[in-house]
Length: 374
Ligand code: F1P
Image (cartoon, rainbow, N blue to C red; front, side):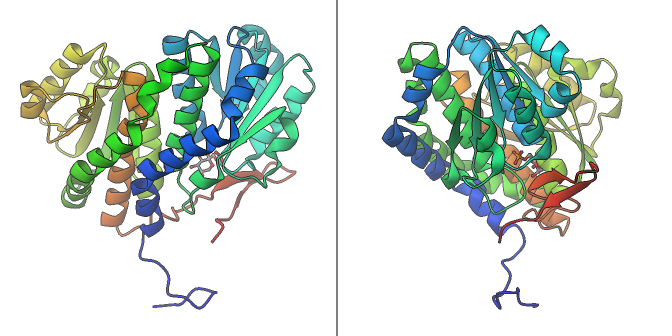
């Protein structure tokens, strides 16, 4: 086996990714400890407002993370909040800022180096009325230059190209911040026990998901979700695409009947993120598609006889916590599915084809990525 430039033997494929995925409970514990120690969120809650409209700006997984935070902030904490890809702000700044009425902005970038996000930061600098908060896992990146305050979750960074623990750690951080901004920090109390619950859940389920991914061959993947789960489904689609170079489609759950249903069959794995609000209707669709011959994977908080009967793989969270507090755990099955499918296809999820840790554009706008830090 070829040695690395450092003369060491390379890690087997996917080892960074699997370590990062399975270390999420410990990373969440560290995140809570660091935020507590720094008193950072309390400080931010004293600087930023809960009633002035927010915009969240990111790319890739950081964009989907932004959408999940916006859904939780609006629904659970009643904080006015819009999320968008950085490019939306860049190419329609005045319309976007007018439409959203944004007075506060969050720039989300694990690397802190994504050109589109940095350009969004430069643009927002011209709008003195808008206060900008950055969140990154790279303390040395240029993002901080454009932000009034910057959260740096360096302990949550990955060596892998693909975001997993950085995604869930930033999600939990903003769920805590949302509770503080809303004035009732007790709403975030369910997050305190999450690392322990998630560890128990991983111990009971990680092997099941990995075995399923290793055994079954699928031509393509569909992910379905409602509300915040729709954006979890988008992130799942991106994970399977990045980690295994597979085709994935994402829809609002009941939208699948309106045309995409035509692709249901044994070659396509359809994953349902069952939501508290639409569980009954979503379960009916699981049955309907199973009866059409589709392969079904279900991520639900509570198993039911129908879900047991019509799922090829049923992943039960089994948690008492409210739905917003379960989202970070519900993100993990896709991490394990993506890595498992990638490994089965002989790929290396740590270093996906065509991808880099950050999309750093040259002055002429041609994409060339920021190589992984080994
Ligand atoms: C955003 C991102 C990642 C993606 C890939 C390229 O990075 O799109 O979500 O997985 O690594 O970059 P960042 O702005 O959050 O660093």
